[in-house]
Structures are given as C-alpha cells and as structure tokens.
Image (cartoon, rainbow, N blue to C red):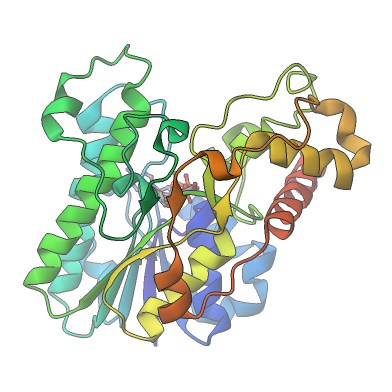
Length: 342
Ligand code: NDP
C-alpha cells in the first residue's frame, strides 16, 4: 500500500512517514524542490526504508497541482501547513496555504478512486479558545466536540502590527482548514480523520539546515537552553501548556488510516510548562545546566490550567503515550546532536 505524505520535510511529517514505513507501507512524500528531496532521502531515519520511499515535487500548496502526487495512492496524510507566528498577512501567510492548500490536496484526492482514507494534521488550535489565558480556563476539559470560536471577520480585522495577530491567524488557519476538510469529505468517497494535538515535542529527526531554522515547537525547547547565555536570564511564560509527543502523533495518523476510523482525534500526553522542562534539563543534562535559568523549581502549571481529554485516542487507537521525561529527554538529546553537527 502507498500513502502520500504532504510536506515530508517537516518535523511532524518525518515521524508520520516513518510510522507508515515501519508498518510496511510505501511512502510518497511531497517536497518543494529537488534539493529538499535529496536532503530528506539522506536522513538516517529513512535509510533503512529507501526502497519504500519516493518523492514528488509540488512547489506550493496553493498554486501547486497535486494530481500527479495523489495518483494511485491508497491514503493521504496531509500535514503540510505553515506553523509559525511571524506572518504579517492573514491571507497570504496563513489562510491561503492552510485552507486553500487543504482544499487543493483533498480535492485532488477526491478525484482518485484508489484513495480510501485521508488523514489531516489539524491541531488543538482548531479546538481551543485562546482568547482567555489557560490559567483562566482552569476546570475546563476540552474534547473533540469543541471548536475554536474565532471568526474570519475577526481575523480580517486584525492589523499586522498587532502583537497577537500571528498567533491568532495561525490558530484560525487550522480551524478553517479542518472545516474545509470536513466539507470536502461529505461528498468524497474516502474516509477522513483529523489529528488534533497541542504543542508537539519529541526528537526533531527531520532535515534541519541550521538551529536557526528549527521548526517552531522544537525551537521553543531550544530557547530554554541556548549556548549564548540568553536562556540563562529568565524562563519565558508558557503560552500553550499542553503537549503531545510527536511519536504518539505519528501513531495516531497511522492508526486512524490502518483501522479506517473516521472522526476527530485529540492527541495529548498531558500538561507541560517551561519550568518543568528546565527542571528536567538541569537534572538530566548537568553539562548544560548553566545555560538555563533556575526559575522556581517544582512550580508547575499542571492542575492550574485547562485539561485536554485524550481518552478517545487511547480507546480507539490504542495509544500508550510517552511520559513527560521520555518526551523531553529525547527532544533535548536530539537538539544537542544537531548542535554538534553545526
Ligand atoms: P514544520 O515547519 O516542520 O513543517 C511544515 C511543513 O509544511 C514543511 O514540510 C513545509 O515545507 C510545508 N509547508 C509550509 N508552507 C508550505 C507551502 N506554502 N507550500 C508547500 N509546503 C509548505 O512544522 P510542523 O512539522 O511542526 O507542522 C506540521 C503540521 O503539524 C502543520 O499542519 C501544523 O499546523 C501541525 N501542528 C504542529 C504542531 C507543533 O507543535 N509542531 C502542533 C499542532 C499541529 P518546507 O520544509 O519546504 O518549508
């Protein structure tokens, strides 16, 4: 069987592709250039699976044509989407690639009878209400029934110099992309599952050109342990205090396809905060202790914020979930590997 993974150069997509490969599937990945294809093919994690892995170039999610990419595949994992908060334009930087991109991929898939299942990497961004801080939502438990209340009109009204614009537009882009996917699935012959994780951590094993070009969530961990002394001053506030391990996110993508399950899946390993990560770094990686700020050891947000109910994923998909320590130890170990290669 063959699955198309869009944006296979990304942090999450690399793990998603790996999970399919490990389970004997062929993977066709889309990348934006030949050069990227070469870099991805050379990744150590993909080496044992080189015979199962191929690439198709699609230069852009919006203007690109996915007809060739979806040809004869059995399933599609659509993960490509911009994840950063630095954009200045709702349409060009977020809504276009996320929403039009999702339509472009799924409409191409809907024309191919061999495609039986599509899984979309959505996000907790499409579920949560981010207009109030997490600490003001103590007692709230989010489930797959919840939707981010943001409206398109609100996104249109935000000015690019508003400091909340990038974050708001990103979360809205995920909500409207997921809604677009459900809309297309209504009239398509494939089944649709959407995977909704909060901040995703775990080993960044994808192609990273330099530490300055780390994906957004891995960069948030690296910001706590920078070698230039900048992390030693203070611990930044935690914006989204819930996390998922990228390996569990990858398993969720694979299992919804393998079990042909339709629906939304909230994937969450638990609450986290930057103080907890720093405490772990100082205990488990004493050689880089001085790079971190001490903060207030042991003072965590844990039960002071909203909760995410991931019970459906445990029941339907059999996910066991990595522990906090294993997730962040493996993240930090891999960040140090990348650092050595620089
Ligand atoms: P990355 O930045 O590592 O990966 C993003 C991928 O999307 C890359 O392959 C990138 O290609 C591709 N991409 C972005 N914009 C375009 C475009 N205009 N045209 C074609 N390809 C494009 O991010 P993540 O792996 O973290 O994110 C992957 C998915 O997971 C996203 O859908 C994101 O919303 C979702 N997600 C991520 C979370 C996290 O904490 N990391 C949390 C919840 C959801 P290129 O390499 O060429 O730039």
